Length: 331
Image 1 (spheres, rainbow, N blue to C red):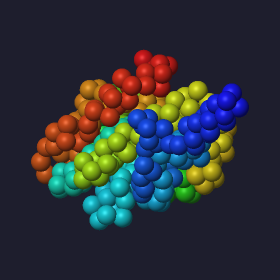
Image 2: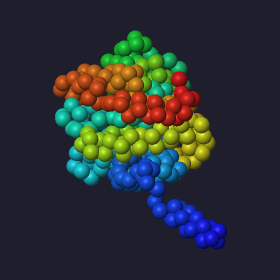
Image 3: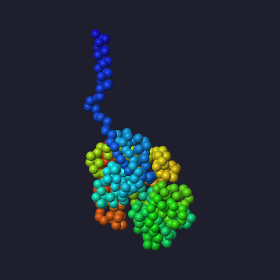
């Protein structure tokens, strides 16, 4: 009898362990996310989340699409070839002003200090007014132009006395090396790279003029039908941002795989000028509004856009509430 009870108990236990548990939450369904990203130091949370397996751990199958800037990300999202991507605020604002159904769900990085006015080292320029009569290059309608415009207004520099040259950011290193321009307004890692090569001196950084948030963008239709997937993506993004803050050396090694000609040591130095805080806050909404007003003043858009149409705080607020440990090292 005892033997029969023992056998029965063993069978029951075997059935228990082999039978799927009822009432327990099933793992989240893996969702495919095609996500646009280019080559930039500030995009490092995307690279880290992919390489460290954070997306996969959140039940996401993320395919990275090489889209270099926000206009390409917005167009791919509208066209259905991507669910979202990363890009600068100017491209986002331009798209939304024309009715693009996209919105910012997180920040990939920000910090005006990453934008720098750099002068050729051989010129020996020490003050802003020594720029009068000199060729200063920046990309039209981009954060470099915004920084220089704000700098001139706040520092009393007469922009009409400066020879402005519109130049794409990717062409600035060659222009400095060939001495066809005297100064450039560019963003990391380019200032640090050129400084490390002895080509430029940093005359002024942009932290006192703007913060320049970078946007994690998703299509509003995808958010509506896959909100949980976007929340999981945001969690992975928060994890990656914290990883960079806590492990800058390893993060720089990952970053160097995605930026041609960059070395980890220079990238890690560049992190000093970036803030990897992924939260969409009221302050970030105010920065986006400031960017929008600048674009409006430059006639890059024809009508104002509300900051709450450009970005939503809901995902950041939910992640912070559920996973406070991911932001415990932030102010």
